[in-house]
Image (tube, rainbow, N blue to C red; front, top):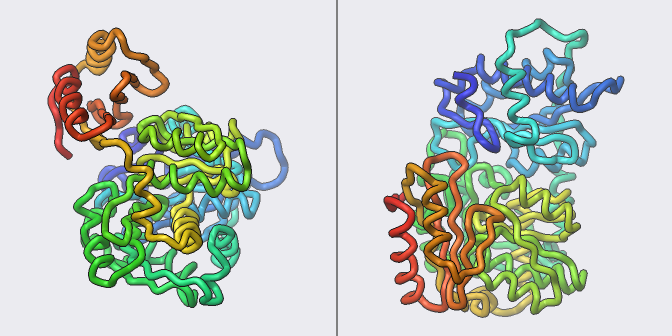
Length: 460
C-alpha cells in the first residue's frame, strides 16, 4: 500500500486509502532519514519547511508527516496554508535543508499527496531522492532518533509578497496603472494566495471566481489545461469587460491566461511573448522551453536576440536546464513558468505579476500582443493507448526516413512543412502526440497519418 502512493515526481493517492495518516507518518520518517543523510555529519539541526493546501484531509496528513520528520531529528518550520511555490520560497528564504508541501495539485478532492524539494528548492523526483525516501519509509520503524526535532510556526507572507512583487509594476501600487482582471481560483490555493498578495492594490480591479476553498468542494476540476474548466473565466472576461482572465490550478503553481476577447492563450505562446522582456534586459541570454512548444517560441527568442534551449518535459528537467544555462526565464506547455530570480523554480504568482506588468506597459490589448505568435496550427496533446510503446516509436521513426529525428524526450520528427513529438507518459500506459504545421488542413492530415502508427486514441 505504501509503495503505491509514490509516483515519478511526487506522492499522490486517494485519502484515506491508500494515503492514510499512518502512511503519511512513515513517509515523514523516510523523508526525515533522507534529509539527514543529505547533510552527512553536520552538527546543526536539519530544518524542513512544511506547508499544506486547502484539502480537508491536509491538516491530519501534515500532522502525521511532521511527527515522522521530527522522530528522525528534523526541525519542522511550519508555514501553514500556502500555495506550493511558497514552500520553495521559504526553503531558500530561511536557508532550510528541504521542503514538503501537502497537496494533490489538480487532482479531484478525494486525493492528496506530498511534493518535496531539497536544499535550494531542488525538486525531488524518483531519480533524485524519492526512490530513496520510499525505500526508507518501507523499513520497519527503528524507533526515534537520538534527538527529537522541534516544530515552530512561521508567517512569511510579507516576505513572499516582496519577492513576488519584483515582477509587479509599481504603478499598480499607486494606481497610476490599472487593469481589470478576472481570476478563477478553482477553489484552490489561489483563493488564499491572491488575496494575501494582491488585495488592496489600487491599480487592480479583481473579478473573483471560485475563491472559496474551505469546503472541500471544487466547482470544476482544478485543472486549467482542460478547456472546459476555463469557461467560467472566459465568460467573466466578456461579462465584466476585463483586460484578461487567469485560471489557476489547485495548488496555484500553474496558470492559464485568456485575452480580453476570452481567447485561450497557449503557454508556449506566452513564453514566446514574455521572453522579450528578459532578453531586452540581458541580450544573448538563454530562454528554456519544453520541446512540445510551438516553433514560434524559438523564433521569437532568436528574433529578440536570445538563445532558445529545448528541454525535456517536467519540472525536474526544466529547472535543471535553466540552472545549466543560467537562463533568466523558461516556460512549459503545462502552465509552469520558471524564473532564475526564483532559484530557477516555477511560480504561478510571479507569472501572474509578470503578465500584468508586461500587458499594462505594452498599452495594447493582450490579443494584439499575442497575435504575432499565432503563426502555426497545433493539434494539442492527443493520447493513445499503446501496449508496446517502444514498437510504436520505432514505427514512427521508420515511417519518415527523410525526417530529421531526435530523441531528447520521446521521438521528435521534423519535416519541411510540419513536425511532431511523441513521448511516453510517466504515469499511464499512454503515448502523447503533439503536432504542428502551417495550417489546420496540414495538421489534420498528418495527425491522421501519425495516429495510424500509434494505437487507440483516448479522449481525456
